[in-house]
Length: 342
Image (cartoon, rainbow, N blue to C red; front, side):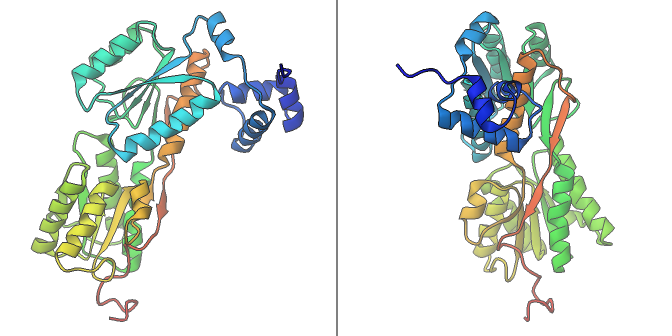
């Protein structure tokens, strides 16, 4: 039988302390991403496996993490879930995954079930999160981190992206290309992210001295079908030269709506999305979009939850990650602009 690799061996090989190895392998904060990567690689190469089961048993834990997701049919939720799973794999934790599909009653029932000592903590992706569910989490004393909350004032540890700045970046990109008649497709109204993204769009327009034409603003759910239908109406009735959509699926619908109305993207019409789902890079033309790091969000939220389970206090209850503009081939100067040569 091969001799078990020790934490000291990993520490010596990685050039760090044994405590740093322990923190990294247990998902605790404090190590840089470079250190975390190096320790993880060395541990994998040497075959080091922490005795998590014994530690959990000693601490009276199950080693299980509950995940309650709004939806597991969308790439958005799956990308976050992938990040969570990758982070928990390094800590040798198992996931119990549930989907609620915006059913508040089912969501509360799932928390009630998981909170009976079945899991050590819970991650929730874009939950409905009624007040009674929040109270249930507190009553059960169940560690919980909310990923992409519908509202930011919820009194639980939560992680979101900088929706406002991200949408300003996307809108400013079109303005810099010379567009002035820019339509905007909002997301669902009960989400705080919808309001923040729309505010980012408005401020980018106004700071550039451009009027926000309310006729070019429409509301939509986060689906391809709604994006196609809404963009078709905006194009036929008001003929903007570009559309900014509050989600990639809506933006992909807008690209096809432009084509269905005889417009070439981006020669005649530009489209910007928000998310950077895998489909954004795989479609033709590639979609210019605002990236929210979904995989990283899952990892960071899982890391925070593990810290709470270990009794550590988070530095802040509201964790925010940045966004960045990813320019592909769905945007160009508007027709008639000197830069187009048309």
